Image 1 (cartoon, one colour):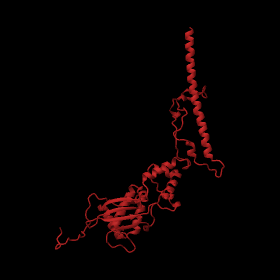
Image 2 (cartoon, rainbow, N blue to C red):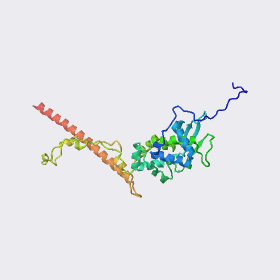
Image 3 (cartoon, rainbow, N blue to C red):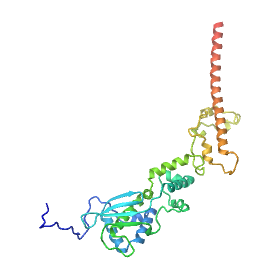
Image 4 (cartoon, helix red, strand yellow):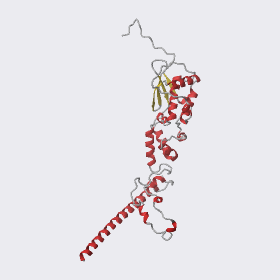
Length: 322
């Protein structure tokens, strides 16, 4: 129990920042400055923080004074160790997009193959923000004022600025993280990478989505180039005759794994105001033709079996007669 005659001595600031074991650190801003996503973030720091705060904040980031960094929808929470025993709490807020906005954005992504193909392969195009502009949205903030920065330290700030060396340190770490994984900006804006990719895949499979340049279904047919070929001089007499080697091709009619693959690639009908939905009519035609082909194939197979059976019976009767 603390004696009333000897009150607890208040914590004092040390001359140098207290060392952090296994803290997050960066060697320099080189990695961030070489990345388009990192550059966008560094510009916000340079525009909002004073020169002194930038110098001290970068030094903190190099020393590894960042204890933890947590990305949440709309903000990044960071613990930065200073000269006091307790780490300072830094918050960098950036508004998250609501669900309807993300639905529109993903719809735009699915409608343009050059973006959806790269996104589905894990690549974030440098021109991705072109999809946000028509919707009046910005993936990366443009002005430093678009970021709401706060820190619970009591150090003086430059007039009109909320940046301190602790918030600069935190922002430097975020810039370095973006350089390594630009998808983090999506998490800050309110959607996880896995959710975005899953919804994008779903939309790309819907009829009428995309510009038709991405295939949905590719049937398995062995290339004719792999079949043994003879010199042309040996084939002149029977060049146009059916080749027995073509029987090696997998041409047995089967129902496709994806319904109406061609219509899915073509997309919605370009004709507006028509009396009948063209895509729906074509789907019906495809279904009727497919069912007929499969039925004919099945009937042909059964007929071949019956002929074989009849031949066997005739042979048996001939044998008995003898």
